[in-house]
Amino acid sequence: MKRYLSLDILRGLTIFGMVFSAIIPHKVLPAWMYHIQNPPPDHHLDFSVSGIGWVDLVFPIFIFCMGVAIPLSGSSGKMTLRSIFSRFLMLWLFAYLYVFLDFSTAPGLLPQFATLGGFGALFMLYMSKPPYRWLRYAGGALALALIVTGALIFGEKISIYRSGIIIFLLSFIYLLGATIWLYTKDNHRVRLAIFLIVLLFASVTMHYSLQGRLYAVKEIRWFFNMEYIYFLLILLPATYIGDLLRKRIALPDGYNPIRSSHSSSLVKILMFLFLLLFMVWLMIALYSEWSLYKFLFSTFTSLLAWLIIRRSFPEHREMALIASLLTMGGGAMLFAEGAVTKVPCTISYCLFTTAISVYLLMISDFLAYKFPGSLYSRLFAGAGSNPLMSYIAFGAFVMPLFKITGLIHFYNAAYPSGWPWIGTLRAAVAVLLTMALVALVSEKKIFWRA
Image (cartoon, rainbow, N blue to C red):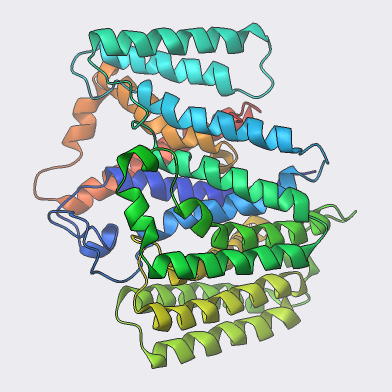
């Protein structure tokens, strides 16, 4: 099956957001440039703050992309429980390896060379279809040697508690979600029932704050996090959308929502702008206090979008309906929960971010099929089709290379003191440069796969 370009673009945008939000100047930008519950200047976690900002969207959108991709990758019929568990183990291992192999914060040039060596080891371990089978064994041996060297020479700590939390979470979410999809791929009613059971489970455990109590136990949280289950509220609807897309992509004419629409170019552009403006409004509404007016307006607008899309863009009508239902559900749950927060995770957070993800996927469809072959598509789709490499390339390849070559001095000089927005621009350029490098590798058909 052909790759679904729009999904790669959306995943690429998400990875950009992940890396960009991690390297922008801290303490000095407006609060909306950070996680809403980690406001400047101290960035201490404040549980009393309610709202969602753009940074809070990044992780759930990535989960959504994973959910859509599960049916697409399983369309060949080769997905089995064994293959799911194997991929889970590789993702889980990656969450530790890329942390253990990153020595870039240690002083001197030797740690930078070691970090580049670690990137090379991961390259050999995770490269899909390596030209020589022995490369994987060589990569494993090199990774093990570098980890031991890092512990003995650079003082790096080897611990089960040192893992990349995002990849760690994704590995378990994938394990649960892919297993559910495998056994419900021909029965959406059963999957809906599982979704409702998860919803009930989340309602009860969130009410009694069981997630926080379990997370407070260090010996438990390194391995189990109740958010594995909560985030199925994002992943399961995404698998349904993946099922819809899988059938359409497999058609003889392929999937092209722009081509199948009989609307004029002006209507298509206006619909694109309408969805974009609605999402911006929804983000602003969720950033501040929720009200009955906002709930009614978001409900009306989402239903209006569905009514327009079902006539003008028939291939998007089911996606638009799902987004509308999730928007209404998120608004209703927000009234019931009293707040929408990432930490602790709320049901309204899961439903709203899933709805926004669906709208973003439809917008990505417009950009991908209206402007095929554009630099934007090549850049973000290239990086999005290689997510593991894109996620660590800046910290494990670009920055060590900057330090070794002396380019780090130019990088530091690009952020003059007292000019935080210049530092923000520098971060954006650095991430785009990294993504361009990964996109070039992807165009050579070299991918990292778990």
